[in-house]
Image (tube, rainbow, N blue to C red; front, side):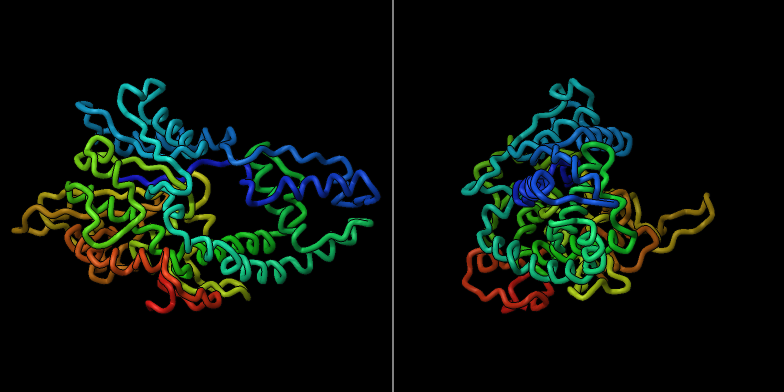
Length: 426
């Protein structure tokens, strides 16, 4: 089983600038602004959130995930050798790994696992934060992703902003204030258990907040991102090497792999029955993109959500989200259609041993046929492993890592990219 896990609930990052916004509101209240009605609490409100690190709930989420994964996969653990568990030096990623293995093995987890923390900083390669080796990813993380999100914010928050401005006295309440209030609601809730900002918005406005996140992630790391595939391809290539039980190689071209670690069987074993990796939300999204899960590829317009869009960040990459990839060995081929009768034989007579791959996203099966027609339509959502590996043989070529990450290309307008590579390569 191969696990790729996002960190647990955290405080805001510095890049979200919520502390700056909090000080702005507190300064306004200390000067001449008098907030009234539903905003009256701001007259005495104090911004009290930390930054970047896990909150208590985040530690609990990863500990509980470790317990759940032990129930599901603990029998696969081979106690003849310690697992190599991969994470990064970023505090919230490292602590997430530690809390997970504490839940999986217990507080004496060091008897069963070694945590390998790859350096997460510019100039250092790691598949668990590949953007540090992909300079062009900063272009999609910037205005390209934020502009359509801001356009949507102006639309879904227009009415609420007008209402809140009427309660803000001398303070000029803007759409940005409304959006920041929604963000603080989320962070205060996971860190303090409650936030007075949450009741300020109705259901439709919270749906709008969620869709704003969908737009940004799709443009920054998903199929609408010109570096979406490139950001995730390194982990995909590592996954394939592990599945095939072979050393990692880069014969197909450059990636963000740390070749010092990946060339060493001690730090990159390929014979484990369990692989546990910990990373960021953007990497989970980009891995799904690099693998080619086109069910998440629909264009998300800045004018509003399409009727049946499947890429919803609150279900795909919430805090503590994870991808479990099960490699299943069966003594015979398994029927595509499963009988409802308990004692019916699931096997196809006369067939030999067959391997399957089963993707689960946050404990829900990702049906392979939805993105890979070669897998066939199956009740279980699986795909024959050999078929899936054949599909992935061209994934590195499709990602165009070198050109996507360091090439000189025009980023274009949001909407010009729909396959996770620069528009010129489509």
